[in-house]
Image 1: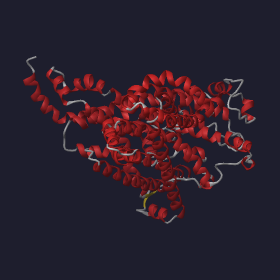
Image 2 (image 1 turned 180 degrees about the vertical axis):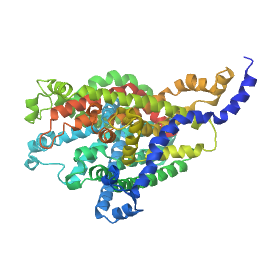
Image 3 (image 1 turned 45 degrees about the horizontal axis):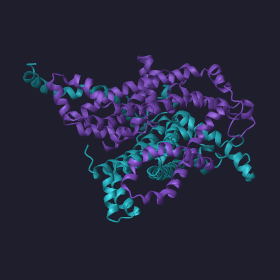
Image 4 (image 1 turned 90 degrees about the vertical axis):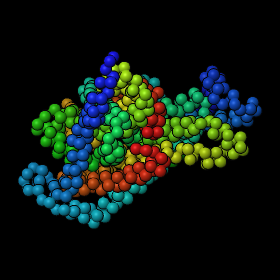
Length: 309
Length: 315
């Protein structure tokens, strides 16, 4: 044990590069499979890159921003962008409302009721997007689905054989319901944790001072929950903006004549169904930029809340 | 439904409720308040149970439909139970469609991703929280930005990259499980770093100094002391990497093109969807098989879930 004096010195010096030793595995993986593909994505989006170029039948041709020009001049792209924004916004609002309301409700429940609620939410949360989509699709199946049978049984004969995925917004609504179902638990659990972490004394003190429940919620709970709320909101926006599986499965790859396309599905179809890799990459770049903008808002929200990186 | 809950409520509540409640609410409130609040509380409980029923229903329906005999399913039987449960759908799925193979594939990929990505992320989190160096903030911002990268957009370059990697190392190329493992590692690591950062930072500097005084090298400290201390965080972030990998549909669909023996569960389920006639029994049985491992995982780690999220949220 006569080492300390000798050991700390070289330890310090070694410490100058030690962090790179810890960082290297993650950095290697990220550089190879995240950064490099990202660079490739941008590069490919600047080329005329189709099946002929992949197989080598035709040479690669640099076309600058032509892919982007094609997209921005295409009313179909704007339609898809609109779909994405409206659909994501509806999902985010729905998820936050349901999750927030249930988090507040959860604070007023008997422990066993709360446990039941959390367990079922956990079940919905744990359900993979593929199986969740399959079950919801089955529930809303035109002929064999439970929902239509119940509606007909109630006397709404018009729903016999009614297809929920035929009409554009009805299909989006169905997908959105599934999305909210499997994503509200995250919001609920996080907000519940946030609410219960508010010190009881603070609320109690306000109550002793004569503050009403509404006042407490507005002036004490809400400000204290703001950091958590910001995170939950941005996280939901990012998730819902990127939805792919649910749309792909529930609407059969983007709906009838592509009416239910969102950016991700559109880009995927352009690349792997139509072999327009350049165009698909350009859509990917645009999606990434939009999400980057949202991320910057996220960062600013964190900063404003005094979070230090 | 609600009537049944009203009846079962009082029978259960005194047993569990009475034991757990007093320390929480009743002790610091005047005796009159609980009585006045009771009706409202009842309402909240009933509402919550109704919500729970609605939320759980799709899962219940999935299990029920998987157990229904085929004739009942094809007749569109809507009774919320079945009198003659059968395992036919499961048998058909596992024996005829080789579901077991896909299940093993999915488990292999998810298991490898959890272990490898958590390890990489943990080491990176150590570097990013316990060392001060110039590029630290930049790296942290990049980690955050990396989480936002729409992975679907990267499918195109990744496809070509994996094709090239496959030329050199076939096991990591297209049509092999290795391709899914490395790709999912890359997508799990940023979030895992972000999440573990809070846990690693929460371990006081004094612990490290004490370990150093006792002669532990930096790596020994990280391995023997820090890692066990942040175990809850590791559990929480392993849930996320497990679930994103297990649930992945897009990459499995894109990168495993022709090697049917290397397909994973989501794709297997998708093959049951047929243009005119869906095999709902098979789809539901497959869905049950795919959901169960995730549920088990959730139940195991659920205790750490909230604390884990708390750590991530508080940063």
